[in-house]
Image 1: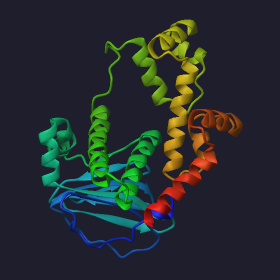
Image 2: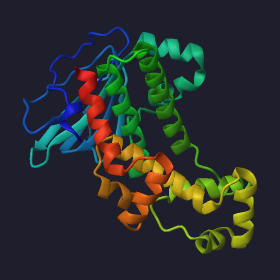
Image 3: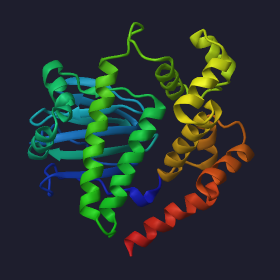
Image 4: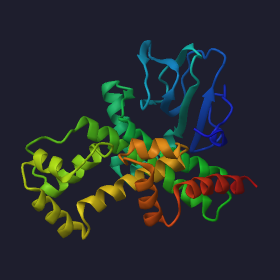
Length: 295
C-alpha cells in the first residue's frame, strides 16, 4: 500500500466529524492500546500484522481480508504480539445518527448491524478478490476526502453509502449461500462461477464440464445475453479487477498474475485496447492525480 494514503495513528477514541471518518494505518511500533468503547460503529479492515483483536473479553486472531464491525459501547482492543510485520489496517468510523439516516433510505443498510447485535458475531472472513474490491472502495473514499474536486461532498456521500451497502451485501451473501436447488439460469450460474474463480484458468472446456453442457451452448448464451463472447467477458472482468488493484496500490506484475493473465504481453495488449492507455501510464496517472489533489 502506498504511503500517500497513510495517517499517523490516532490515540483519540472519539469522532471529530458528525457522520464518518476513515483512516489507513501502517505501524511498525506503537504504544499498547487499552480496552475502550465508542458511541459510534467501528469498521476494521485487517491487511497485515501479528495481531489479535479482543472483543468483550474474547480473543479473535485475525488474518488478511478479515472485516470486523464493533457496535457502540462494545469493549475491545487490539493486542499486538510483535512488530515482525507492519500492522496495517483501515479503520472506518460511522455515527449512529448517520446509520439511522441510511436505514431510513432502505432497511438493506441495517442488515449487518442487526445481525451483529443478534448473533454477537463480530469478525467476517473474506477471500482475496472480495477484499481487493473493498480496498478499492476504501482508497477511492480516502482520495475523495483529500481532494478538492468539484462535487467533492456529493461524491463522498455516494462513496460512503456504496461502501456500507457493499458490506451489508457481502455479509448477507456469506450467511445466505446459494443453494443447489435455486432456480438460477445457466447464464447466471456461469457468471457467478466465473466471478468466484476469476483468478484461475477458465477455458470453455472447463466451464462445459462444470455445468454438463456443450461449450458451443455456453458460447451461444453469452453472445445472446451480452453480445460479446465469453472470452471477451472474462477478459473484461479480469481487466477491471487489475485496474482496481493497480489504482489501490498493487504492483502491475502482481495484479495481472493475481487475476489470471498468463503473461505481461497479453495483459498489456488487452489493457491498452480496453482503456486506451498502458498499465504503467495508468499507474503513473493515479500517482499524479493524488499529488495534484494535495496542491
